[in-house]
Every structure is written in C-alpha cells, then in structure tokens.
Amino acid sequence: MYLTKSISAISLGALLIATTGFAASHSDKAAKAAVGARHAQMQIIAYHTGILGGMAKGEAEYDAEKAKVAAANLHAAATLDPSTMWVEGTETGMVEGSDAKAEVWTDAEGFASKLENLQTASAAMMDAAGTDLDALKASMGNLGKACGACHDDYRVPKN
Amino acid sequence: MRRILLILLGCAVLGAALGWVLTRPDPLEPDYAKGLTPDPQAGALIFAAGGCVSCHAVPKSEGKDQLVLAGGLAFPSEFGTFYAPNISPDPEQGIGDWTLPQFARAVTLGVSPAGQHYYPAFPYTAYGHLAPQDVADLFAYMQTLPANDTPSKAHDVSFPFNIRRGLGMWKLLFAEDDYVLSGEHDAEVLRGRYLAEGLAHCGECHTPRNALGALDRSAWLTGAPNPSGKGKIPGITPAQLEWSTVDLVEYFTSGFTPEYDSAGGEMAEVVRNLSQLPEGDRAAIAAYLKALPGG
Image (cartoon, rainbow over all chains, first blue to last red; front, side):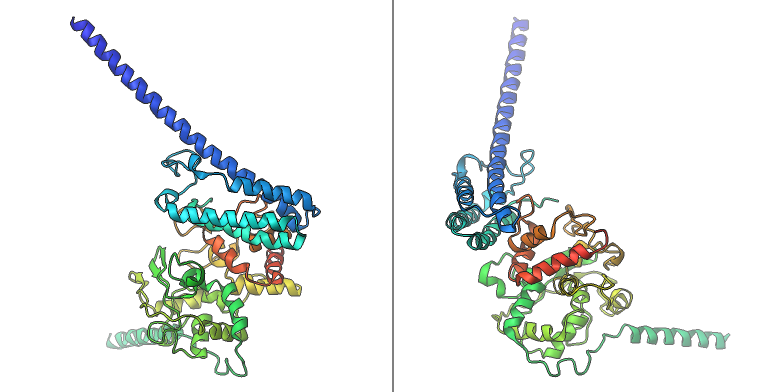
C-alpha cells in the first residue's frame, strides 16, 4: 500500500514536471517563433528598401515598374497586423535574439503611432516610386526617418 | 633656517600665482564681432549642423517642441553627472540677455559670461574651429526660438572635479587649436573637416578619451566605448568602415546603412540634424572621412 502510494506520488510528480516542462518549452518556442516572424518582416522591408535605395544611390538604373512593385511589397510588409507577432513577453532578455525594448508594450500607444508613421511613409513611397527618380529620392528620406524614429525608441542599441 | 622657509614660502606663493594666471579663462579677441551682419536664416543651418537640439532640448521632446532649449538631459560620466543647461532666450534662466561676444566666448572658448570655465561635456574644443560669421548667425537664430523659464539643473560632480578653476589646467593640457587632419586637401575635404571636426563634433563620441576625459587625437574617430556603459561607438575611419562615399551620403540623408538597417540611438538624432543640411555639406563630411588615414 505504502509502496503504491509512493509510486503514484512519484508518477504524479513526474507528470507535473513533464507538463510544466512541456508548457515552458512550448511557450518558449512560440515566443521564439514570434521574434523570428518579426525579423522576417523587417528583412522583407529592408530588402525592398534596398531595391529602391540602390536606384536612389545610382547603383542601379531607375526602373519605374520595378520600383513600384518594390514599394508595394514594402508597404504590404509594413501594414501587416502587428498583434500576432508583437506578443507580450517577447522583449529583449526574455527571448533569445529579441532586440525589442519593453517599451513596445509599456508604451503601446507610442509604438502604434510610430508604426503608423512608417505606414504613411511607405504609402507615400508607393506613389513616389513609380513617378520618377527625384520623387523616389525625396521619399527615401522620410522612409528612413520613420524607420530610425522607431528603432531609436523601441529597439535596443546594436553595438 | 628662517631664510630657507621664507624662500620656500616665496616659491609656493609664486607657484600658486602662476597657476592662477595660467588657468585664467581666456578673453575673446576684442574685435571678434566687428563688421559681422548676423543672418538668422543661415544660423538655422549652423544650429542643425551643430546638433544643439540633441543635448539642449527637453528630454523626450519631439517635433517643434525640440526647439524649446530648456535643457535637463543628464550626461553620466566617471566624473559625475552633467546636466544640459537652459539655453533658450529666456533673460533670467536662459541666454536671452547675453551679448554676441559673451555667446562667442562661451561657445568657442568654453567660458561663461561670469568668467567661469565650462565643463568639456559642452564640445567647445570642437566649436573653437567655428568661423565668427557662423557664430553670429547661430546666435541670431537662437534668439528667435521660444523662451522657457525652467532653471538649469546644477551638475552633480564631486571633488576635485567640482573646482572649475581646475578646468583651466585641463584646457591648457588638452584644448588644441589645430585640426587633427593636417596636410593639403581640396575645398570639399576642408569643408568636411570644418563640419566634422568643428561644428558637428563627430569626435566627441567616435574618438576614445584618456583618463581625464580628453579626446585621444592619435586615435581620432577610431571608435570608443559608449558612455552609457553598454556597447561601443563604432570607428568611422576608412580602416574600420568600408562604406563608399555614396553609402555615407545616403546614411547622412536617410539614416539607411548599406544593408538598409537604420541608424539607432544618438546617431538617429545626428541623421535628423545632418539631413537638414545642403547635400554638398553631407558629401563634404563623407569626403573628409575618406581622406582620413587608413584609406
């Protein structure tokens, strides 16, 4: 009797440890995946900004059609609904690889307004990119400022 | 014995007197402001290039509010914490009742109207390169900004660094009139040197400092520890930064790196300032960086 009791207690304990362990690793995985998705989003934005920037710098020839598509993709990435990826508890220090400051969540309103500024800049770029090279160049500055303003407040310094 | 004591005492008095004279705040050239017609509009560009807002705006202010230069930003250092003062045109708390020579002495020599040395957290060793016309324009522009009567916060600096006269010794040892980049250069590089070493004071963050907080001119712009204690401010000489001139100009204009990441931290503010300058000035800074040794 005593033995059975102990065995059940041990198995219950093991079960408990196993479940919490599983739960922890499960949420850990989910948090990591959310951070990964954010990085992918940023990479898509950077990639298309690079196509536009190459033309602005004169490294690539200006191609109105290509610029238009790049700007549209950039805008699409910038307008993804953030709620699935910007999950609470995924700030720097909580999840490996995360550079997001806790302020993303503690100052959610400020973060939302910075995101809106990016969307305004990317929408303006959609109009400018297909117009001509000068319009594209002028629009790059505002796009850069929108990126920088948010990184300044909501991303931990890189180096 | 008495005679020796008297001689020793005499030496001590002489030494102290010499020290007192040597550490005396420098006066301004008497005819500094003569013949200058200040242009506040031109001053707006000097103001942007000088990055005045980055330190003197009320912390966390944005947009037009950044033009209220009431100060208050804290600068922690090994010597204590410095606070940016109010330099708005308020006559009581700011610089509203200053004259142009007083302003010029403060900015280019680091001496207050009351004749006190300023701490070199204020980059007057860089601003010492400024042309009098630019100083006059800057002063005229700053007088057009909104006044604010917030009192300046006293620096929190401990002994012996709280003795202002000691800064006279610091200036004797470390304040240099010469540019770091010497030799013959074309007009663009010279313009870039004026901006980078003077007005925009790039060296203040990108050059390492010695134990007394003076810039190590032999390691000019080769990077330095971040005073916040976290991380490093990158070196920007050609030996350390392989960006093309076009890359540099783009970075100063939009803040995009060649990988299309964006400037962060203090540099995001610097880009906000530099992006207001004529493109020629941004190209000049890039040309200057490319002309540094190691290219």
